Image 1 (tube, rainbow, N blue to C red):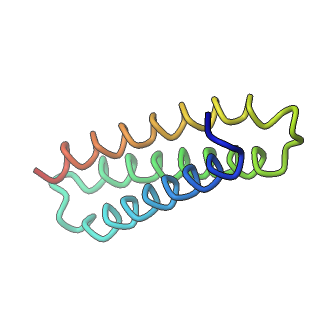
Image 2 (cartoon, rainbow, N blue to C red):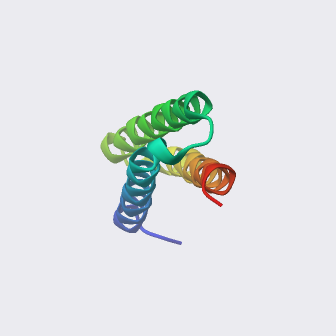
Length: 94
């Protein structure tokens, strides 16, 4: 089982990777075949990332008896946003 410090480091790294992918999508927005749909999807992804980031921050400040519950929530949320980013990349940048 990973320690709290391991989880925080791993999740922080994964969230930063998601942010980098969001920035890549942002940089490519002018190449989108449907700019309006692209902008809506990008905005939704940014919102999801912010929500996960806030959950991550709560996990970091949670007491020892609470953090493992946050850990499961954050892990699932990160997987979901990674999948959404994968879908966006494949839909808009083939």
